[in-house]
Amino acid sequence: MRPYKRQAIEEKNEINDTNIIDYQPLFAPNYLLHHYPLSNNDINFIAQSRLTIKNIIDGIDKRKLVIIGPCSIHDYDSALFYSKHIQNFQKKYNDKLFFIMRTYPEKPRTSNGWKGLINDPNLNGTYDINTGLTLTRQLYLQLTKNKIPVACEFLETISAQYLADLVSWGAIGARTTESQIHRQMASGLSCPIGFKNATSGSITTAYNAIKFAKSPQSFLGINMNGSPSIVKTTGNMHSHLILRGNSDGPNYDFNFVSKLNQRTIIDCSHENSGKSWKKQIDVINYIAQMMKVNSEYKEKVIGIMVESYINDGNQKLENSDGSYKDKNELKYGISITDECIGIKQTKEVIHNIYKCL
Image 1: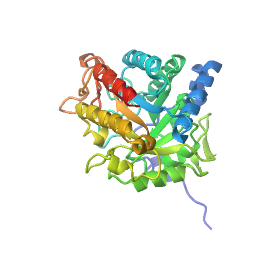
Image 2: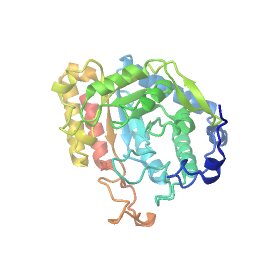
Image 3: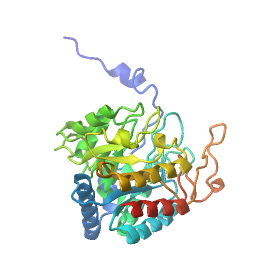
């Protein structure tokens, strides 16, 4: 057999990386964890938060989950300011509600657009991911020290190694619920994971994902030193369902929920509200009232997810030509992705839910 000749290919690089502009080094997970470590108090808080969430999913703890916060995090300081409201909710409503802050640093995109704090922390298309990972970990660590459980959507499978130790509850989005690599990742994550129904409305897709994630898996990944590895998992027994509506309409009403064969979290935004912050209020109030008058519905619904921020509505980061606005042009405390309920209305709907339980 003739020896394989590589020289021409290596020298001219004629067929490899033809569409790649550059490779930039990404620091290893252990590097970030070393510089921003968890204290023993932090570890105990996260462990207890995860246990509480698991107990609510299992029906041992009768409280309801409230996963609440901005559609996406784009500003560190305003996220911390918003979190003070979570602390106030915890003090007032802890006997019936368990609050977890939506702190989403990655955004799935149907088309082009800003991909989130990790990918583009400078909001200008420079994609300084090392800075994005660092800033996100700093934020998660500060929230943890303030005794606020962190919720996020896991999108990039590699980024989980940098942040997952700080997360009390995670989600797999509607676009990725059918993805094998996300189901595999979920099987190894240490926090409870919710799978959203597919954008088509398929609940079967989410059911299959939950079954898959609860099973042991082996797959390709990276270890904490950043080395390519074969990852083997035990399965995540607290994988569960999230209803987020679909292209044909909402799926949070009693007729739909009563047919489910497992308990669920209801996403009050997205297609359940047509991404309208005003309609999101209607969805939350419906759920509250239904839990008050119908024991079956109350038993099936283990919690809600709410997109809420300091001020209601949203604003565009991109100009009409696709370029990014200057950060100084953005209004304070308003989402740059989906519409959110402002804090005034948020206080009203949370109080209503509490009264109805």
